[in-house]
Image 1 (cartoon, rainbow, N blue to C red):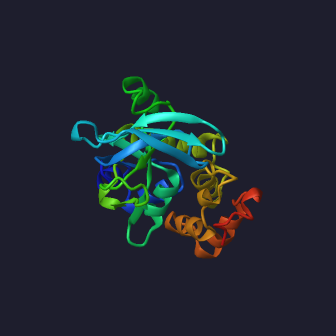
Image 2: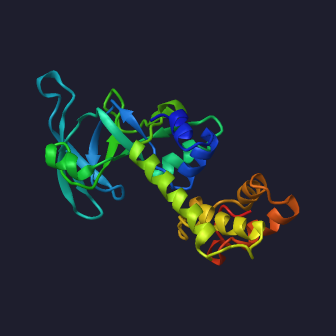
Length: 247
């Protein structure tokens, strides 16, 4: 589904969906018809040669590569893609937070690499790979530009997120039993902690929300501004103090 449809399904707005993308809580992708070839490793220096160049007039050339750093070798046939691909989180974060809602991508991630490998091992010689995109001329130094209008979300991911949010809300309400003794602000603190930090990666600062983001959410849920600022700091985990997105 599109960004607009995803927002409708989650009963929120598009900005909140993009926030979920930036937090790495929701994956997004594109339907690619670009030319590219599988690469089993992002790191290293790949050297190679073409053994078949434009056979029968097509662009599906076959390449042999060696990683100079690891010694790993593989051969792969390039070709056009015609299915859904996930964006790498780095690119997904950039497009979700970009002022103009656009990003240039050079790599895509398969939805099911093992299935593609089984169906076409010549094009996808390993189950784990990224797709290295090429320009029409065959040069591998010009990434592809996509916008928010190009983003798609899997329905199964949207449904899983809705279920998770529902379970989190139930936990926030029932985890302490009858909450007659809990203030509304305390309940909001528990909910905010789960919403903003439960899925954060302590080693990846891009998944750490800014205190200002948490503060705005708390205020939108009814917490007084005088309390929301302190509350956002209170629920920030100790390991996130030095996160590069901290305020």
